[in-house]
Length: 511
Image 1 (spheres, one colour):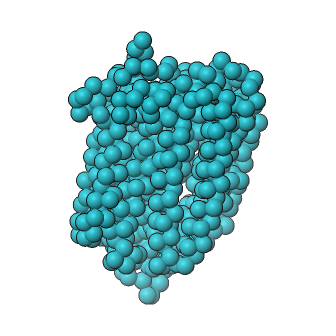
Image 2 (cartoon, helix red, strand yellow):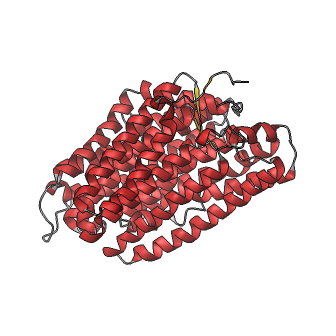
Image 3 (spheres, rainbow, N blue to C red):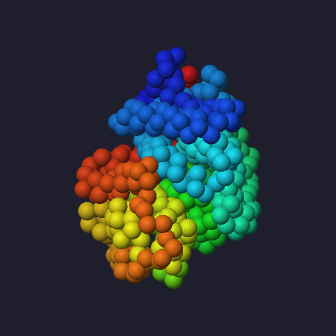
């Protein structure tokens, strides 16, 4: 029987969009290596990113009304075959990833050439495309083991991208190794969890898993599998205190890599957590609800404050933004832990708003690094007078990070406060406001250094090149636009939350 609301795959190009969104950058990566010319590497990567962005936008339009696209690889129907499944939730995530990559790639031209040797430019773009396609694959797949495969594709390429920062700072090598160890542990936990689920249900398709788990409530093997999956993905999300890999990874990676990872990698991991908690498992079950309320919620609140407190005392702009990300991840997890549709909406819209905010700020830091040679506050003194356009974008990003009205960051926190009040947890609403006030302190420290101190004598006194300024301001303008025109992102987030909160989707059995 065909499932109502599910569109089945035909042979037209439009029906192949769920696989094309991943295939375009995945095929472009080896093409960049085979051609081996640095001059052609960037155009190929940029064309691939634009292609994925166009496909992602088309997919979001197709599923915006609550439809679901099901694509069966090789014509093998699930649960035996691998299914790519697109609904409002992961279509929104696909759009975030592809939009960030498309805007960021022009920025990389000047940034990467300043931070990497010429012979590794093509290698960088090949790795970037692999990480990009891996993240897209994680979002689009409907198969639990195939998700692991894409997770490893993105992770392995990310380890090397971070290690490339060793050309400016050798600490990038130990950072990449630490991330590899932590990432491997997380992946191992996830695979063990999937193994438990397969042992108990005999399937790896997420929709089929959801149906069989619903029929096997109280099964301890399934409970163990759920716990392993949460811990494994929690390491990828950087849930406090499983965050130890994140600060140095963002700090010592090349600036363009920091911007891409901060805007996309943890957001995809948060999506995976939501997908398992709401589509594969049912949070109404006592065991899953207990994990959300007794573990995820307290750790989210702890991360909100711990990340902000540590960010206040940093002397490196990149590391301050990295610890700030831990606090912002806390907001997303808080929305999930509230176990309501409004809370889930807040978490999903914060995926988008935090992505554009952190992309703005990390690109700003990369522009500072290009002219000053470092991201320590001592290097950035007085840069507001030397680089006024870059510094103005930094202010916009900082205001969005705080959550000032009129910026995208305000919308996320406003809906999160609404979700807390709807749940009767007024004290959580107060904690959200209090943690936002901490953001004022560390953002002000950056503003003080950049604008209120005299510049160093040995600083390159030029504004960032246009190829960096334009992407920075596209993201900065997005922080303001989506803080004022909230209908677009809010309606997409609400549709995604409704789909996730409705529970598992029915299994598609026809091609």
